[in-house]
Length: 129
Image (cartoon, rainbow, N blue to C red; front, side, top):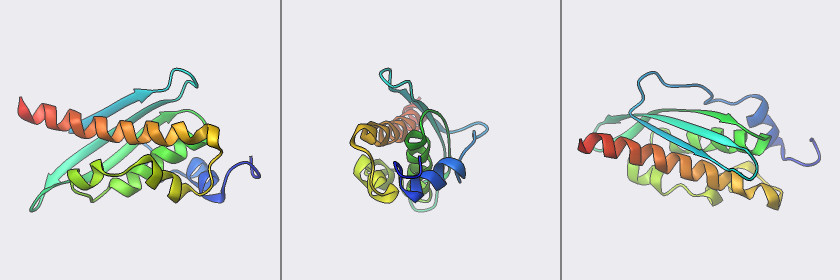
């Protein structure tokens, strides 16, 4: 594993900073990749100063080291951002933060991007009701 993954991937896999579930989340992004079996959930709590922003964000992921590291990184990137800023976080931003990724693992970064966007959409849909 050491030669296959970057130090950042290994660190985020073994010591995730944002792992867990938020009690009564404002939004949940729930997604999976049926091909590889990765399952990802991202929970957000939204607050408002001038604009709505992600006050708290956590994840639960069942998957490979890159899936877990991608989930953890996107949470770090999104925390404190407005919803519009968070929505712009892309799989490329995640990949850049993690360091070199094996090409066959790039789908993990796409999954994390999708889960965050789904959590934001879930929050916005609930707010409309």
